[in-house]
Image (cartoon, rainbow, N blue to C red; front, side, top):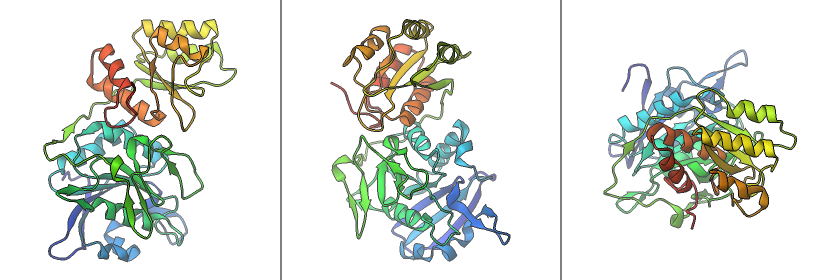
Length: 358
């Protein structure tokens, strides 16, 4: 392990633990405790058993690796995604599972990005966090971490129960690249409107096995760290001006745009708007249409207000989330040179991030 990361081995197991888990602490609310003066400071994970003694019941070999400096999730960048993916890649054969502690604000973006950077997973990579710091009395950190670790250690015959990037929060396990943060002041912060829950934690943990990625003994991990961040999100709203749209589409070096359209993919039919989109496509900029709605999907051509999008070369994102669309566009721009190949791959599910279209 790199010297810049702090590594802590935690004795939570017997001589023959049932599973080994690498816990990656990146920052966020989860790992904060109150100082003597009432201010928040990063938690010392060597003392995690003092805060969460229940971990000793899980019978795991638990190792914690912490970022050199905790990162507020609002400051998470492509470089942080690459660091997380690199840690998983470097220790893939040393541990049975990986749990990443992450701030909630951009957790869904990170989950989506990691799903594209880590192809062929045959082990769990679970992101979790908390709305209230671990040092607070009513913290949700304990339950989220304990259950995430328990899910990470679950087996199903010859392999793990979970074999993909997922997000666990407030009793539900969500497919990582289908998740979205929808609440800021509620423990139920995340939802997955267009894909069923992977598991629900109650008296027992009940897995929705028909929607889990199956264990594949022949699958090998493929690592794709390259992400091209020359992309932007263009969220449409009534009264958006020509100057705003023009300034966005003419950003120097821009390669891709996620257009957040209305309803099932509808946009304005104003002449100047259509012309600006056509000009962007002619310059080689890839336009990816997703819905502003949490649920449902883009169906270009259902209404007159979306018919012209297909005609000028805008790609439909179907039922993909904005978070996954952005990460997917970055991933494809970073790994493919042919724009037509990129457009075709944007239409199809690569890691289950959208539903296959007929």
